[in-house]
Length: 403
Image (cartoon, rainbow, N blue to C red; front, side, top):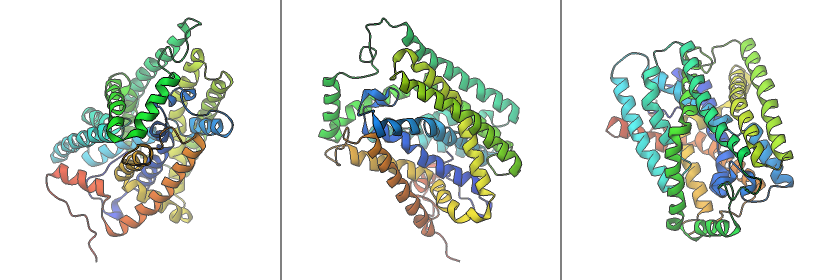
């Protein structure tokens, strides 16, 4: 995700970056909706909350194969690419501005995390942004090497944790290891979110603090993917500079290898009824396979950006990408309104997975339309404008200048 603060003239923009960013910010909602509407453990351990049969199980499987970790990977890679685009490789004022941007991103992320939703990614991005800027002068080969190193380090740690479940005594179940809830715990959690905003801040704050601590363990995946994004920027991949032939090969390899791996792991999880002792398998296959699938998705999008006849189809996604920061935060605002009681409708624990998917598609449609309309009048999305103004220390012009 590149959350632009510097204005970029239309003629100087890379359409592929905008379209990729737009698709990514929409795609991550298909997974985030689960953490907004259900008990948080249901994300990693699906049986923890809500029905998991029939159409609901199908939605989980589709989400696992085509969405889980795929769009956040693209989002993260684009953050690295966007940082390199804005800062460049030389020393100067742009580097100072970068640290100002990351500082304010951290502040906004903390407000988002504790005021709206514990699943915030901005805090992690800000912390990673302070680090990866020092890698920007590396060659693509070194960036790829370091990126894969950090990704593998986090992956091995995560898989080891899930693999440790194979050592559990036979009489220990998901509730005993904290992967699921007792009926009383689940009822209390649902009631807390439905009862009002302030009561819901308690479990949200606990999960938020846990999330910050987890950055120390699993932040390597984010940092590593950002470094890969920087490499792909230098190689011209995310800028649409590869040939059609090379993008076709990239798409075929990424999707042809990645999707079957992820699909097999997901099917195994279903067949084993999400048994704890085999959780590490579909976790591992998706962790690695998601990198390939994300690469394949990005190749397909770049191919689409080379087709003039798809210009009208691309335009709404490009607009959504230019407003990625706003669309990400407004997704949280909408979801909190729908799920938390008192200030909203209090639908936490009420929406099955099929309904969650329907809700996500509705939000997609609205955000695509609003993004196009907003950018007809304004230079930035409202949150992009706020972040830019804070970073520069003065209010920035937001209205488009009529010519």
